[in-house]
Length: 315
Image (cartoon, rainbow, N blue to C red; front, side):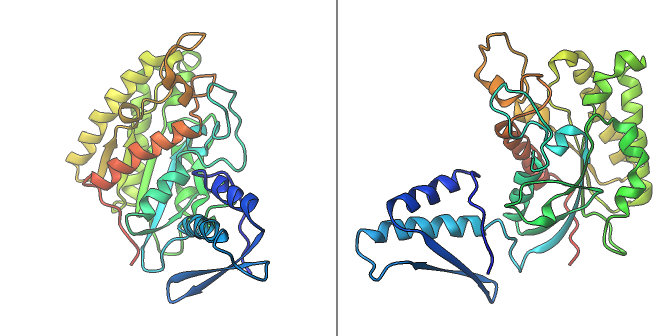
């Protein structure tokens, strides 16, 4: 029998919790029959009264929505490689608005909601990479990635071959996303590098991706706001747009994902805060909170769904 952890994701646990308090405990028996999930709820009682019926309906809806996290059997298989730093890891996912960021092992960041968004477009998403982290209540096939806290473009570039080797034999990623630059800018003064130097690192990464997996579509994102180094962040994002145009001219399937422009995450703010959107970010103004990551996923997802760098499926 499969078991489901009652978790607070999209407020579904609240629904189940209320239902449990209103009536009696339920046993959920999921059965998978011909690609259709049949959920049988067995109330531990001798009779089902009319007062129980609304609770039964609410519980069925909640469980059905939880089951939607399982990809449909008829979906097209999509292998996704997320490349990035602590923001791709999901550090800060469990923080309260403007709270301190930690890199918890169950952090889903923007990866989990983006995987779910892609699944709603008919993709059976599996991620790849050397790191495996994420919440226990999502499919295990969504938890691989290359989100390395503190890393820069050049450090991700150095392990690219190792990352690509995590694909099933003979397979290449059908989608590659990149969100990098935060640590490049954060370490720029210490390393004595400029926005042009950082753009060169990004160019090298794209060059090596194109050489290794020329058919894999790539979405290069603008880095989200970095108030402590905003001048650098703005300058690098401008160069990333140009870089995408240059590689598109060489027939690479690469698109620019305006994540910073569309998400509004980690905006500068006063202390005490005056901008309500500052609650989308942690106290260091580097890592989003769970709500901020949802915005990042929305920006990434819209760029992918409406962009012309279409994901390549395995079937």
